Length: 227
Image 1 (cartoon, helix red, strand yellow):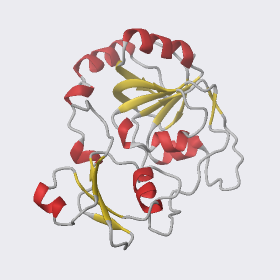
Image 2 (cartoon, one colour):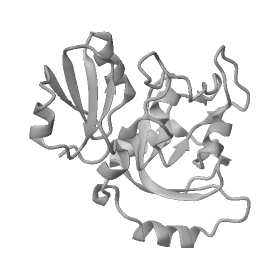
Image 3 (cartoon, helix red, strand yellow):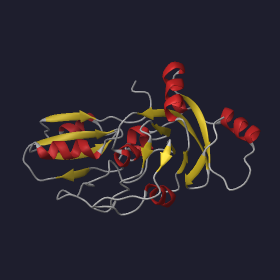
């Protein structure tokens, strides 16, 4: 058990705990569908100092400009030090406010590098993150953790995949993206090199995909075991 100071939303959540060593980009990381179902540990010591931009801002193709999906995908966030103040030219809210709005718990005051070394040596594992104003019943949380659905057993595709096709751009040449947890960066890059991007659900048939006469097909990244 590791004690710290809670932030974001007060709740209890369970998930596979993993780490990210990036120095910047927490906004992108938190909205990356690849992290769906996970508790994310950020090793950089100070997080939140440049806040969070406006989620509603989109580019000319209607793709979110600063986010990799339409919501926070992680189930919880673990940081060493949370910046309660933020400064940036396109600041819309603080990290703490954003996570509270999306009902995601976080914990600060953690030796995230020691935790990362444990995960590196022992492998990723299931964990619980609890943010509460009252005393936490540790034994009860341990009991719930043992019975929680293991990450490898979760079915993610119906959660992270688009429910219908989405078209970005009107170029003649097309690239189809099979959405198994696609980041918006994939769509942005396809548009930047001059192709129309068509995002389709994960279970779209071969015949349907080929009906678009694509120049290429992208199998996106996403959560869960790649196999």
